[in-house]
Amino acid sequence: MGVITPVVSPAELYEVIVAACSQNYSQVQASSQRLKQMLDMFGTYDSLQDIATRPNTPLPIRQQAIIQFKNAVVHHWRSRKCVLNIERRYL
Image (cartoon, rainbow, N blue to C red):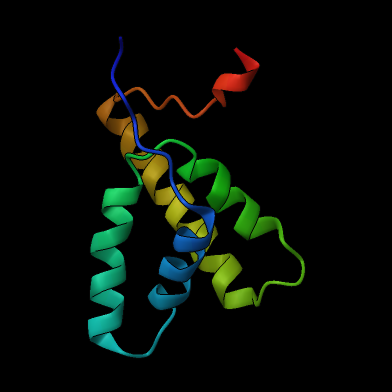
């Protein structure tokens, strides 16, 4: 068998991004920790992109999704860590 990678819940990721936009410091801290865990899950980058491209989503939430996507990709690129975010259904 192979390594089993958990799949991200798009609804939970959306709620984490919304919490990251909060004015409540403890809520921002909790969402930051959860997002770090979710970045290793399969489908996170696709879901962040989906959140960022929804025209009916409030702008601060879309911007937060874009920022998180950019930061994660830059971090993986600099560390030369392989980011396999291609949906397995295409392989």
